[in-house]
Length: 503
Ligand code: NDP
Ligand code: BG6
Image 1 (spheres, rainbow, N blue to C red):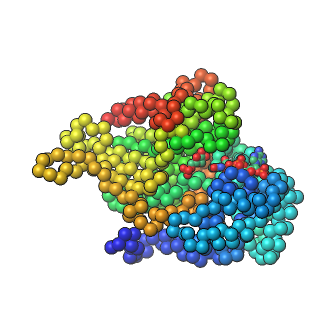
Image 2: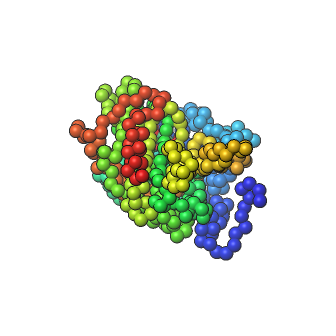
Image 3: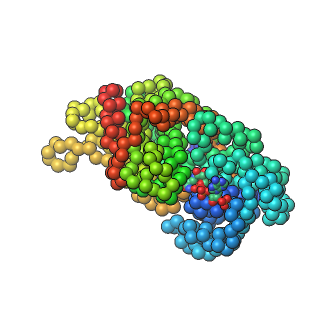
């Protein structure tokens, strides 16, 4: 069979039915839809939301009858705003044909309206404008909130009061951060719940939409060999790594209030951990996946400050928007344990840092050494699966091989599945996570969005440790590290200590 050739499917396996249903959903979706980007003057809207919408447009994935409207407080000149958006649009490698024409067409279809977020009157004006655009036909409305969380509540109140769809669905997409701790999350949750039902709220964690993160469920549950090996009897530890080789990139004001643990670990890396360790879902339906993810999260042992190493890169405090003497961590490493039969005693390491030596996100699954010790007694790592989320998506397996030749030398080598080779065409065309997520929100498909209960649990896990770390007498203080390095060496020590404990 050829690379990526479709499999012939037999029987009525519910997982395959879900895949078929999903493919049909994409083809058959016809609801007229209006997308309102609230906060359309901002960074996220320009960098991610509009480029993703353009890509969906390019690929013919937006409904035939669609409207896109930007809304924000600034009274922007339409042409100037459109030109700024145009600057950020891009076509993927395979999409160069008609690229410029499609961009022009897309841009012409964008309109902009200014108004306050907390004004029901301004949203009533928006509503009147949308009604005209929609020709007074029932049209689903997707409100994408690309605004800071302190205005989520008032914007939702205004939408609810004045701008919900008539005789069609209304959905609201919200971006992280969903609070700073359990308390603020619950407040935010109540504000959202006062205006919209849980099924109308789509909370984005864009890591969940990444191609390789999606593949984790398939790798684990569609491959007998992995499913059998995936437990404490065989796995020694896992390490989920997020590294960026740049700093806060003009977002220091936001970043300093949150820090790396809230920015990356409590959401992106924890979601990846859930996909890696959850039990097999009954099917690939959103409700079944959410059930096992939530169960897994509730089985993680609460974190304490002593489970962390935190760091701050040199020069961070001098950046615009960072208060003098800030102790906000730009690097964190921690260890987690899961209190269930499958994972009891296995350490899970999470590392996240800005301004390091590399830009990458990957997972390393280390297997117990077993008999390989007989061949390589001094080797630190035995068999290992590396799942590279980005860049250069890949899955590789480290195995012992005989080195070819008359001598009987052995060596560790790697069985590599590089997406760029295995899926030569498709890998040039991997959709940005935001495209997948926005498309799903338009279609009302919730499996890749974060459930309310999962957020509550994840904040309960992290809040006590964050409070301890942020207290005056915290036992763990940020260690300064040099930009462009691997971060504080204390993080390696943390892993060595926990590995030694389970050996
Ligand atoms: P911005 O700071 O660019 O804000 C977006 C827009 O919101 C601004 O253009 C401004 O529009 C309005 N705004 C800004 N501050 C306030 C305020 N204090 N009160 C009322 N309105 C305000 O944010 P981003 O675009 O970077 O982020 C939007 C959301 O997405 C946030 O929740 C952020 O955490 C999240 N996010 C952002 C990412 C990114 O890469 N930028 C990545 C992941 C999540 P106007 O003044 O015209 O009303
Ligand atoms: C965002 C964080 O959620 O994710 C940023 O707020 C970070 O600080 C970004 O840079 C990383 O996303 P990606 O997709 O570029 O790895």
